Amino acid sequence: MQIPNLTLYRSVLIAHGAWRWVVLIAGFATLVTAALQLAERGSWAPTGANLARFFGIAVDIQVLMGAALYLVLSPITTVMLSASHMRLPHNSQAYYFVVRHPTTMIIAFIAVHISSVLVRRARSDAGHQRRAIIFYGITLAIILYGIPWFRPWLRV
Ligand code: HEM
Image (cartoon, rainbow, N blue to C red; front, side, top):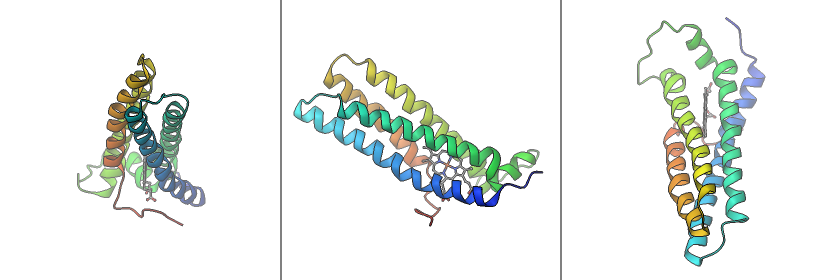
């Protein structure tokens, strides 16, 4: 079994944990902007459209870091993956990071990209805004559910 590079592991773990806040702020900013614009009959582009795009990019970056942790760096997942015959108790932290967290976040990743297509396809500003509230709202709820809140909220 390969021993993961611990310095790189720590750095990516710190970055992955901190980047969640960028993802959450971008998601909430997109929702609040869409709601305010809808109330004021404002136009979706450029502010709403740019925030939504940034939310998608922030999730992409987070998923990339998550994949690096999952496949290469994290001792929790790499050890478990190389011992795939082991049955993990469903309430263990290993099961959480090998199965639950990645599955939930891959669903969120798919959701953010489907949302982006659906929002772009709307024909009016109000349509963009309503769809953004619904679909990015669902995406954000999935992300909030998938975050391991039992871990430190910020590592230094
Ligand atoms: C929006 C998407 C995601 C968010 C917001 C997120 C958030 C987090 C947070 C807050 C932690 C705890 C960090 C810490 O303890 O300091 C974490 C750990 C982890 N995440 Fe994610 N994650 C996301 C996607 C993913 C994906 C897609 C994967 C795998 C393919 C993944 C794999 C991991 C692993 C393996 C750990 C634990 C590493 C360890 O403790 O050794 N994450 N994630």
